[in-house]
View 1 (cartoon, rainbow, N blue to C red):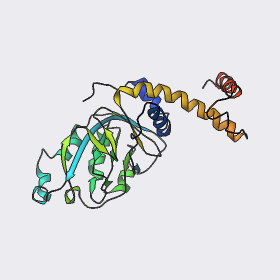
View 2: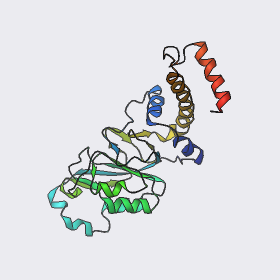
View 3: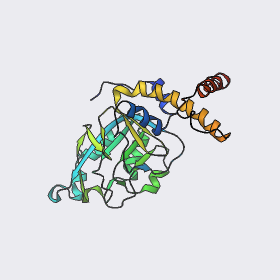
View 4: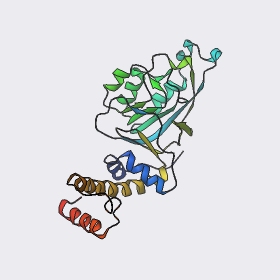
Length: 241
């Protein structure tokens, strides 16, 4: 598990940046597969999800181990993960990219919200998705699913390295979700990525204003012309951004 602790300053920066900017910054560092594939917000409310990862790994269910009675076990990993995911963290589930059976439902996800968790992500599906979508806590999945996880998945390991939508997720990595999806930021890069992307977001605001005013993108995006660089510096002085 990472010793990294997400600071308030880095959290505040990440709340204002996009997964697209993070993807570009990670690509510059040779990391190409940190976007969780085929996962989308259940109900996007215009506010980013930011928090460190706490993980749960599912394996294919074996019928003799996954009768409905296993939920009577107080040590059932799915329930334990819901009750031990720290406040401010994101519960990230490896559901084998299979949404045919639910990773969790509205009661468990509501419990995460009440406990102060920052969000939940599954590369499978959630049941009761409509109810989950009414929560303030962000939730991301592949699509709604009615069957219980026991029909296809067995919750096995808590807070271990997992794959979620083909992205590697290590406990303590920083999860950033927006309206497009979810990026996984390796913990040791989180502070510098947040700082770099803050500058990227500022520049893209400037570029979008220029394009809306009729500017051509060649020489502007990326800023290869002296004029574009000078105009951006002047814009930052005037706007404070």
